[in-house]
Length: 309
Image 1 (tube, rainbow, N blue to C red):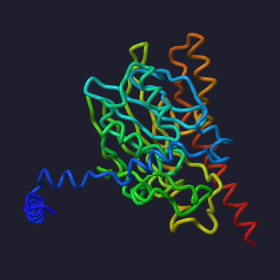
Image 2 (cartoon, rainbow, N blue to C red):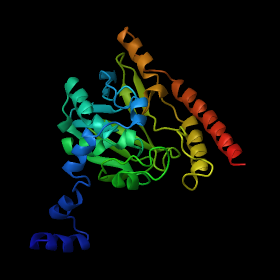
Image 3 (cartoon, one colour):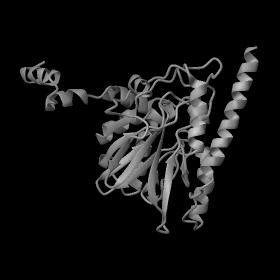
């Protein structure tokens, strides 16, 4: 360490934030070689069957919310006059497609100021390191999912052996914390279960008709092949149930989610193309999804308990 950084280190120890220390803290966790190799790697059969990297034409969902993801996995761009916010990075192999989708809508990846994550699984976090490299954006994530994001691997579930480029988390958020940029404010809602730090985001948005709506970027409440008996992590079952109760009390009329089937992406987009400007507005969609997922969770929990006896 040079003299300037040594002095900066002393300053940091005394509680003074230095430019040098800030620069050191922002070093990427994945090298260019690691990111490039991941982008070029063949797709896992699991990813192919899930259509996680199958192209989908980008479009504006409502207001300043744009879909820039793939057919089977979502990425959402929230645009503002002061820069943009991107939710989820899909796979490492999806980075060029996401950047191209952003460009096709008339925006620039270099104007993305914040990266957000729904949860730390490879199909939503795998591309974050590459997107951070392309944009220079700050990564915002929950405390409970941060270790997985920064390790580039999760220790349980069907994707536990599928590593991805680790992503440096620049800001840790908790329940009720907000990310604000250019007049847009996203609020974080901790909804653990699917992962320990699963994060649902909400955002006020104005529709084409001028009406005010609330968009909810649902994390996930599926079991998705994970073990809930025995629990993959302590308190998992209680966390799922608390999340279902929490979402039951929430109100939103634009439901968006990390996979297409959770919010009827193709059908709603077809309606939008046919002229329905409010195709994604549905005040009952969140409640329907939550009850379906709660029922499915209890059914899978019962099945796993029965199989263990």
